[in-house]
Image (cartoon, rainbow, N blue to C red; front, side):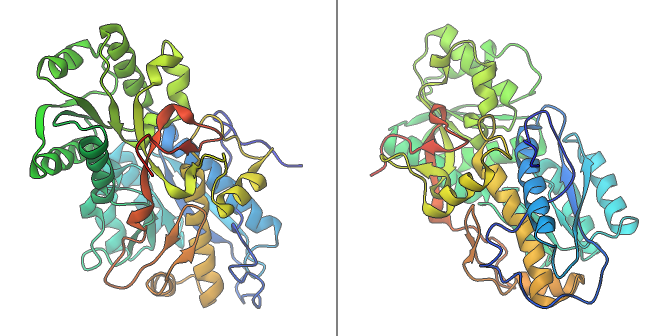
Length: 399
């Protein structure tokens, strides 16, 4: 009997390879019988927990699907989860435990760039295969971190999509750039502001706000008084975002919000004062997670939605978080299957040779010199309030 994985129900387990037959999972059994241990650094609680909760649903589903199909050559996938609470210190401690004591074969995460900034060098010293969705550009450097691979777009790819939409579609010449006070929020806001300025737009207000700050009025007033024509958001905190949107409505200010994928999280709908407060909000999205005028997703995504029905809750999270996590587990399992080994060297070498590897979230390509694997052309902007099972309509302005 399957169990529904919801916002409130975390489970440790695994995911099943999205397309087991396509990944060749019927190869001869591996000689080893020990579990394939995947470390999962998950900020399941705390102010920045929304992404990890969605990712966790994908991790659980994928491992359970693999194990339900007999595992990888008879070996079960074991997910070793640690709740980092979004705290870099806790992430460091968990990483060290996974490498030195728990002897995991690969690590998925952290999924928060602030934590990843603290753990990436540690994993590199331990030669630990690491796959993560963190967007900060410096986290990927094949020379410094030959073990680290990005499964999501880089911040440069996100920046390009946001900036192009704000300046070319929304026609904003003056912008306010707002991030939270995490390592990610500070870095992303700085990079975003620099990009706008380089392209000739004026950054009239820039701030990093504590995600727990109860009153957003002072910052929003400063942005309006400075003449901002668009608010650019870089934060995973849905609580902070909802308070900003509620404040915009109370001010009667018809300014668009453009930015981070969390702008379209299902939690926003539960936290805003009125549904209309979520209008004119455009979040980073992806071709694989966007439906067209016919209401349909791309075929591979439609297939996954059908597989998840009745097993994984989609309505209060983002589909890309779930799909991305499924792909991460599958990439580890595929490496073990293809090489017959759980050694660090074998997994890393296998990933370095992938070309257009067919995941649900995207088609990933890596080489020894390039560990940014997500196709930039698949990054788009979504109408944040158009969510349906964690997927979205393309934002206005796309052909």
